[in-house]
Length: 192
Length: 172
Image (tube, rainbow over all chains, first blue to last red; front, top):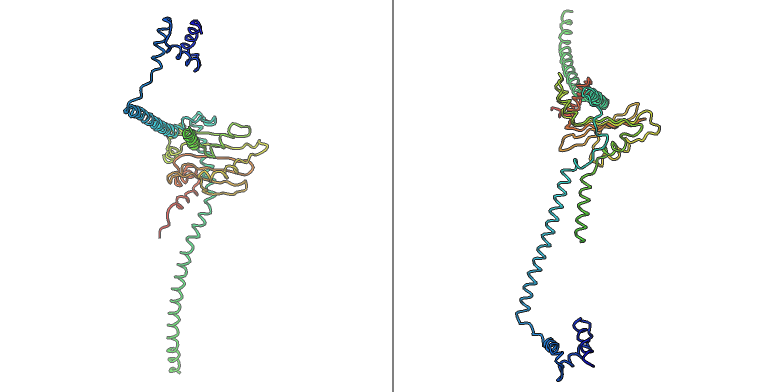
């Protein structure tokens, strides 16, 4: 492979378009004994690049974990905070909805005063209340009969007591009549 | 993501549950303004004006001040095919927390009274009339049996005073 082709391949390598085989070829070529001065810079760079990557220190993983762990914790905290805010916002909406439901609800078209004149409105109120009370009266009329029936047992009791007293009195009169009758009869016999 | 979706769904369900309409509101919204229906609405603002009006009848003024709104919906005689919204409403009211107060049957049909209680007070009185044409009266406010009884006092129906007696416990 001549130098022109090597240059082309190197350009391709710097463009990041070389395959693994091509890269191995370049490595082999540039690490050889004879490398033209033209590729001195490339040789230096290429050989340095291939040096081994140092292993991370023992504490590296720990440090990395501690950094990444605290980040996760913050993220979790942020997420839980977002949930709390969401729930709080939901409750706020619920309360606002409850308190403002009357305001939020669009009033139906019929909910406009039929009468603008208070005198007419008052007359209508009287008429309606009259109609309502009239119907209630019809329903409560039997209650007055029930009340009359409620008085009846007391009246019957009074009548029974009076009848009892009358009967006792009649009995006494009867006894008095009976006791007085033989005396009269005896007196009559003596006269004869 | 999944949790967010569940949370959003729960939020939507809660908000929709809070904004649910009562069956009475629903009937008014559906039928008001339609041909063959008459709607009357007296707002709380008008009631605040009415309660401030000069009147010799202080008790009636007190009663008016306790009423928030009155809504009336009735089917006109001209309606060809009655909707029977009253029956539909009566079916839905119990599940919405309304309780039966009384049922009055007369020659023209049935009149049913239902109440909605909030903390032991009557917050709404609903009167639904059946018969040929349905009608619905909804009175919102801070009502109780004495207030209802006082309606009759102020409208010349003395018999309704019996309600006051009903509320009192019999003295032994």
